[in-house]
Image (cartoon, rainbow, N blue to C red; front, side, top):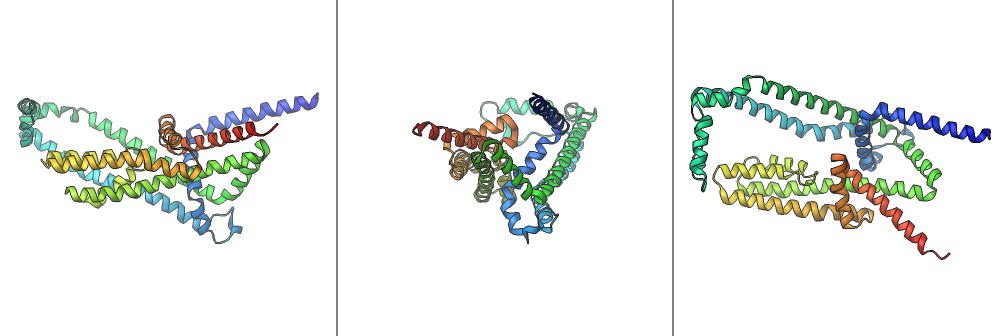
Length: 350
């Protein structure tokens, strides 16, 4: 009797402590999940950098170098984009100052728009054509609206930077203790579910690694192909645009932001065939890569059917954001393993 009470008391105590721990760490759970995802996907690389297995549990140069490399891969393009944004913001400020003095003339192509050309030109004149109209339309910039937006953007940027540094710190810890953590997770899985629990855990890790590999291959391939498309269409800096497209292409359909903006620029410059061709080329490439190639790469590595891989990618992103891009296929891969095991048990002779 006392033994049962001790077991119940221990269970209640452990549950309460787990709930309290989750409550304390709730703000950092996404960062912890990201660090684990990155560590699982790059663990084979870290193993090659590790000089001796006896160094597990210690901070090694390989762990530090790999962590800094991952940080540089992500921060370098973001830093470049922010520097370009600051340069453009300075030019925009000068342009708006001049606009309030002399107004902004409508572009020549605006009047040539079919059916709405004259209306669009007149609307432009009413809003920005004269110094008075331009001053009225741009008055919100001097009322604190832009200052508020700038402060919000700076606050969001600082928060994202702190979160990313937290991810890198946790990632270094996981590299340092990954071997012992992995053994503890496998031992716990075996104790709770038996040998089948170990298989589910390994399958989940393989699904995460396959998702990251598929994401990287899709990003690299789409960046190279879109770089060629940018060069053929005649856009400026096609190599940089291709690199940015490759980074955005790691997220399903996000690459449309880059080639769509380039198509609009070409359209504004009256390069209509190039604009239509670039947009069509980008859409076809995106649909094929995100709907066929990516699910095939991920599903083929973990024996997950195509349709379930596709639903795992999009369903995971809808439920958990960008992190769901990795966790969605992982959960469905484990569920598919459970389903296959259940069917095998059902078909076994009694």
